[in-house]
Image (tube, rainbow, N blue to C red):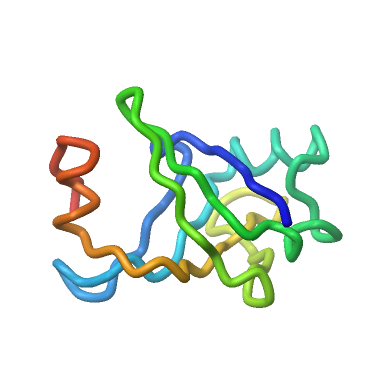
Length: 106
């Protein structure tokens, strides 16, 4: 069991529908490269990560992930693969925005 904390600005969040639940989280290329280089997230240990802490505006939100579904995918730009985490904790967009006190870009 491993926990990892990442700033919200370094993530791409995918929601089901406009106000639906959070489905998956993908690391942006630069952060993925940094975390891979520092051996924080690698293809060997990605399935050990069970909790993802999203940090924004001095607040943190802990989300459980499906470790067996966590994978590396080819990015749109760049050469290194980026990690994708499928979210287990049920949270919808409205609650997420309420916690961080900010409206997200659609």
